[in-house]
Image 1 (cartoon, rainbow, N blue to C red):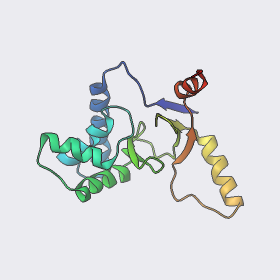
Image 2: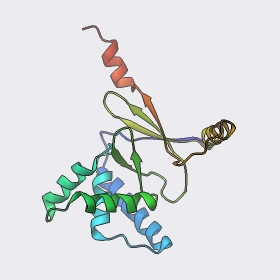
Image 3: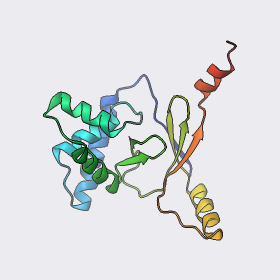
Length: 165
């Protein structure tokens, strides 16, 4: 089964998504017997607030608005915890993070990333994962990370480029 999740959604209740992500995180952390500290929870809320990739320094600036300043190592440790718990994905191409739509299922995701506006869509396609894994093995490689990032141009940016001048 192929699942695609659009990350940019302009007219919906982001707070509902945040509540859903936090509830899923609490369940995942409880099952794994790890602690979702207030700081980790706040970082997760910030990552989910707009469905757009966000960098660690942007997260740090948001945290500074409602509590005392935290340093980069503190934010990176929280993000590392959230990644290991399967709650966020790191997008290397953007040096940014996005919330995981399926934290209850271990999966290797593929991401379509618009090279112009940085819009992101997550694809969960087991067939594509199998094909990539098999092809990599046949060439003497093994995946270290399950995430595949594919540079694209979203329809909105493509239309903008097609418009005459």
